[in-house]
Image (tube, rainbow, N blue to C red; front, side, top):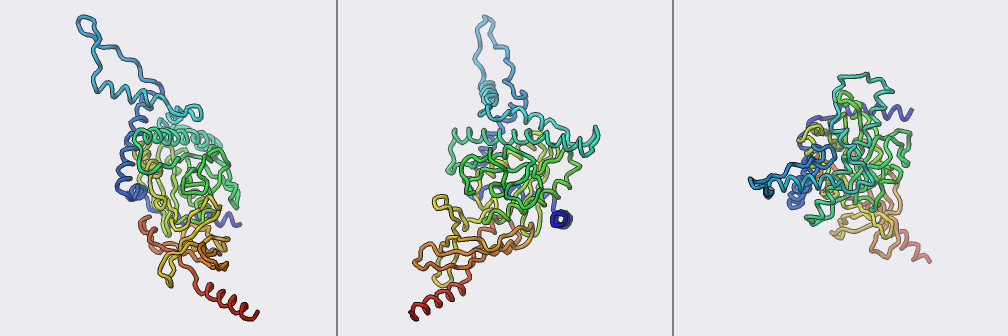
Length: 403
């Protein structure tokens, strides 16, 4: 019964709250820092310069050209244009990390027909074709991630990019889910999460996911993809206490849309068609931006962070009395959130990090009050319930006097 209600609610959210073709969605993924934003643009260009020759020559080295010679039979030097083209093709054919992923699988995706013009679409056949797409999409994302590593090595940015890729296993139930729903794919390995090493081989969890991915065989199934993405995304809020808003991807054939889930709306980007060079460039740019941007652009609250050394969550709270920010250590979560829309109000029991008083304090985390992009999220501060702390101090002092 609960699962049926969730399905109905997700469909209603899509029906009433989905906005398609919002041009600002892709721009919302770009780094806030102007220097990093320019660097991301150049890195995306570098990745595309390797990707296009790889696709053009179908994952193989380019055919050898006949050497130009003069009338005496002497070989002429290559022009600068030819040299650059050869260098790009050779670099693309290297396929870094080939042992782990067969990058040629991405060719099947970019050459796929999105329109349902041939064959039937019964559930059995359609499901089989959809499942076959998972490694194709994963190979594309992995190729971009590995080429980004190479580009960064050639021209290091001020900040190390995130290594974003998909979980190796697809179409599985998250081990931290409270239902049996199977999620198609998910991006993981974000440096903003507690786990900072390679987790792509581990079981799929909502807690380690940066963005969920819903895959369909045909572009005519787009509404169903939105419905399912809206059904699964609350799992991110339920397992990530520092998640303010969420990203997602719908992939229908070769048509990709980025989805931004905010407080009362779902904003979907324009279609990025990976069957075209321009569409691939848009998708590559999105992936590079996600790898380069600040954590709050991905939906993470910078005032709530995980301390890997102590294995504890730390919360920065503005104290009205002292007029300064105080850091609290989260003892446990009293109430989390698992809805797609709304304020997503969370409640923690915490204690002051720099204090001799071992007193638990209630910290309430009100979600952002404005339905805007990530820029507004940064301005939202956590508020501590000071009355609880004052009452606890009075009780302790009173008991000490009585002794």
